[in-house]
Length: 80
Image (cartoon, rainbow, N blue to C red):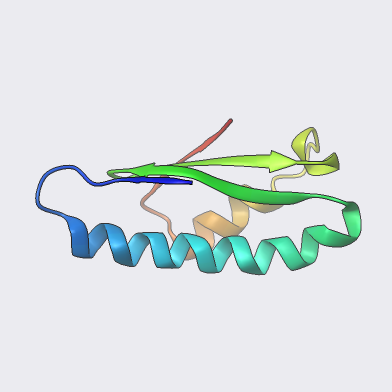
């Protein structure tokens, strides 16, 4: 996991990182029975890059995207 802080935004980024990690924590206990998990790759500005591992990597359901939109509607979520 990498956190990239650009400009003078460390407090805002730190807060966003905390919220992203909370979403991931809540998702991962739900994904565990599917032998899957989601991890943070990096945050840069409003872009949050994540990686899904396991069966959720190719799943057509967008539960991961929905979880992030509910909690962090202003981010740009990118899946690797």
